[in-house]
Length: 152
Picture 1: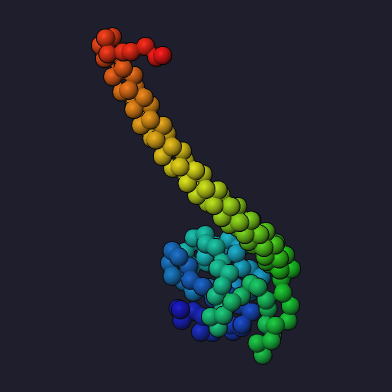
Picture 2 (picture 1 turned 30 degrees about the horizontal axis):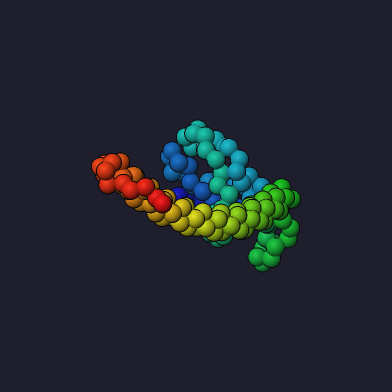
């Protein structure tokens, strides 16, 4: 932090940050969190951070009095936080539903795979039986006609 803040009275409601361009130390009330400001030293534009105050604590979510006691929350952030929590809950429910669906599909895949393997074994047995029938028919066709005897 530059010495330029030495004469400034910095409170826990203030955000202390440095200019990205020139390194000048700047102080702004926590209400300025997230705003775009112009550095008085170099004229560069920068965004006020939302998380660092004079005490290194969080600013922007709540203000504190001189004793560090929370006075009130910013309504916009509270609403955003509530919306985010609702979205998180919704996503967790979707994840749970997808996990149940995945388990169902994995079991179904396993049963289908086992059934397919059984069908392949049966098909192999059928092919083997057809090969035997085919070989028997060829043997019968190749045998001389004189070897046959009429059935009485």
